[in-house]
Length: 348
Image 1 (cartoon, helix red, strand yellow):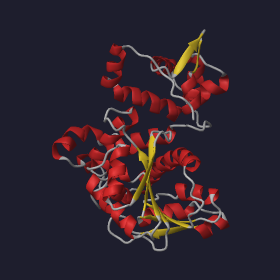
Image 2 (image 1 turned 180 degrees about the vertical axis):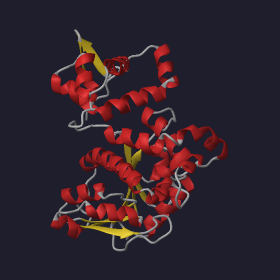
Image 3 (image 1 turned 180 degrees about the horizontal axis):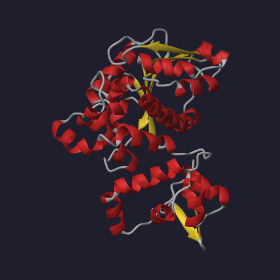
Image 4 (image 1 turned 90 degrees about the vertical axis):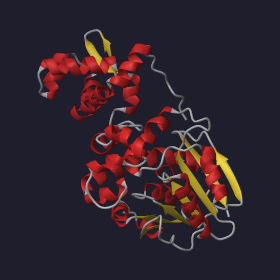
């Protein structure tokens, strides 16, 4: 697990980043769209004129882009050439293992249009920003069913986040004794596929809305995985869980809902388990003090203003208490999982 690196800015520049945050985001998004970082990497650095020729644009816009990216510390200047900074090479090149492109895409195409409604969402305690997306239901996940391309963008980001987060869980928690796991709200099956590959005797049933399970089924082409990764369409909040599981996975679901709704979901998970069965709650988390980290502070408004109108990045203590309130007799807590995640395990 790598350590966090630091980018120092003055107090004035930090406030500028807050005030001009939309501009900073658009510089990043445009650089990714135009492939600027890939061009700089391929040629080992470029001056504005050479970049303009490569992109088929005028020199002035190339100067503006390189100036902005340099000010944001995403590129450095060596002599006359601009080159990718270290963090850009690690996280903003498409070939990199920590590429953030799917996150930028979902912010640009799904999330950002709703965030100007944060103030009204705070006043009313509901997801006012959902008004920008027509369709059925009162949550983003329901509305996305009417927008297949946006749904694809959304679940591409979820797939990327799940791929990055599943490794620490597999390293820290042993599921070798489990024979059948139900992945509640399992999305496009990324977690289920990783688990089935790690444990060849494990069957995983993805339980999610029908349009999502169709996306997931299309991703499984290995015959063995097709036999062991199954899909069950339904409403995770109201319909019975698939039967016969000795483990229930609640991954990246807890943050969507209120504490009360989460506790009720966990009660239903407990009821579906045999004695000795386990429920794993794995999510982005805030710290128990309610002071951070940055990831929790910046993702929580999305749940209020757009996703559901009631969720947030909860603390590990919140998750643990909900598992206890749901009636599980034994609770284990795993922190410092990396990727701003924590795991709480309840045993029936």
